[in-house]
Length: 141
Image (cartoon, rainbow, N blue to C red; front, side, top):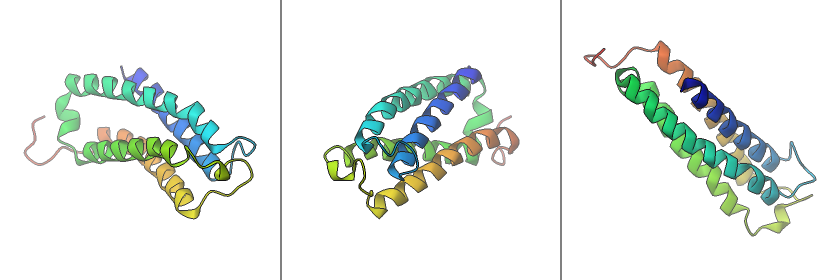
């Protein structure tokens, strides 16, 4: 189960990274932003659903390991926020052909892309950190 969970996070972070790096103009400059998002975001969303399923099973197998740790809730908050914002980018670029090939993306959307890259990296770190922190005082196990 952990292997599937880790593979799914690799797909999520990889797809989100490519999408955000395209918005920043680092990769796939010859492709419209909307085309890059169309290609990678469906895979990202599917992998988020796999993360949800495997994550629920992992929690069910050891509930005290996750539920009573602040870093677990930090990870969940980052996942929800980053997923919503990453998927929201698709709508931001849906009808803006001027931002496609050769045109710079407006600064606020580029800043959001940097923040999302940091958030997804934070998800990875928080996920790894769960196993190394203590539970809340008085929490079971």
